[in-house]
Image (cartoon, rainbow, N blue to C red):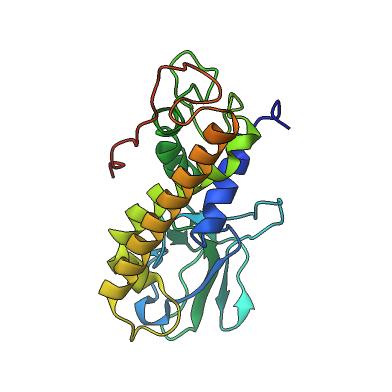
Length: 233
């Protein structure tokens, strides 16, 4: 068990689960009927970061219906949330785009994971730079003993960032909008604090089981773990 390594992809998937950002979690029906002018081909969707597959690889392709019929030939700029029609729909048509989207991209989760070296107190990647290059990087050196600590740490950073994006979360909600945006922000703030506490508890528990209270079980024994700075946006 101690020789097994936590893959970066599993780290990201775990963090997503903790803040309810699984790739197949947020399904949105975006009605565009009031925007259709009969001429324009390009329309901005309510959300960005559209996804086309779940963590297990199952397809989650976005689609658009015109008068309840799936339109063939429409294209989506998933990163920027832009829909392009092959021909302009008619003014008065019922036009609804349906898609899954993510609160944060894999690249953003990687940004938060870069702070794990300071948090855990040892090199978390074999890259000479000490940093991951992107979501598909396979250079992780994190023993699976630290899975809970690492996942909770990254999730805490993501939740902290979501607390600053409560207005966007409010607009993206596909249901009741009567809730307080401030309450949404506070929810994520509390989630971030709880996840950070869980991360520290899990990390320190490994240290204790290894007979060390302040030094990491692997790596430099004289390096005391530090919490990394707040992520920049």
